[in-house]
Amino acid sequence: MSVPFIDLKRFEDGFLDAWIAKVTELSRETRFIGGDEVNQFEQNLAQDTGCRFALGCANGTDALQLALRGAGVGPGDVVLLPDFTFWATFEAIVNVGAQPVTVDISTTDLQMDFHLFQQAAEKHRPKAAMLVHLYGWGSADLRRMRTYCRENSILLIEDGAQAYGVTLDGVSIYKDADISTISFYPAKVFGAAGDAGAVVTSSEEYNRRIRSLLNHGRSDHYSYEHVGWNSRLDSLQAAYMNLVRPHIEKRLESRRTIARAYQNDFAGLESVRCVAPPEGYLENGYLNVILLESGEARGALQESLKAKGIGAGIVYPEPISIQQGAQSYIKDSIGGSVALDVGRRVLSLPLYAYMTLEEQQTVMQAVREVCR
Ligand SMILES: Cc1ncc(COP(=O)(O)O)c(C=O)c1O
Image (tube, rainbow, N blue to C red):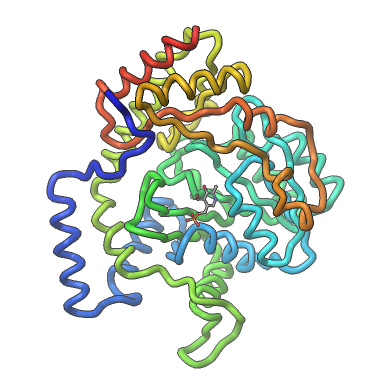
């Protein structure tokens, strides 16, 4: 039995019919920009994240740039970020004219290392820091980071692109952040039918500025208080996500069950570490994350899975700081080589909503054939 790395086609009964009916309705009425679907989506998102404001935008990368600019980060400002993240986190900092400083990650939760983060903050006195909630959970030191940033006047922007549905001690990971971003890229746990993103915050000031920036810096239809750009959330994307929302808890539960089953099943293996979220977190099951003993061991497992028709992915193969495109922008890189080492050994096994038990057992057995 072959098992794909990801399968987005497992829609709930009736879902596609509802979507086609919705596309027909919106098309007949040419309701393509803004309107009820976007308003409804934003209201629901604010409620679900526990934030006062949710601002839909074009994608998760724009959301990062909107958050940075909305918080007042601009040319010449120093911004810290983890060395292990999707490239968009770095890009956003560079695109607003700021200077990125990468910080190595912790071996335990694979998120930005708090002690190195403090060292970096003391050395560079940054205007802001970008914390990334990677893999479907967050840092064990999230609260300490938030407190440290508040006490040291560092703007903390949380890249929660991968974190929809994650809770810490029962509370949405977005709720107590000053400002966070979300991606609704189709492969995320809450995916749109194309590109979409959002910024969530409880700050009235950030909300006002970002609302304007994402719509050409408008203060009125032909009056402009900022130079922004067009990053409006597409109405069709909002409509699609409004149809997904009633199913989202079921999708999350399915993913979480699979994520936990991998963690339990691999707990007895010596040559595989299946990374679990730190205490207090309820993960969203975005990704399974295993660490092999070496790059060679990962290569052998990949080969064996491929031969059996089982998908696997590497998220991410290399740190940000060694990318060619980073070299002319990076101001400094703090820490050792944890990100480099993890990039060589990390692997993700198939995990998606409504993956069957049989599919999961096929994957587990295939791993056990190679790893002890
Ligand atoms: C950590 C992180 N930041 C930012 C993004 C960018 O989101 P988008 O693809 O919606 O632009 C992603 C999406 O892949 C991501 O995983």
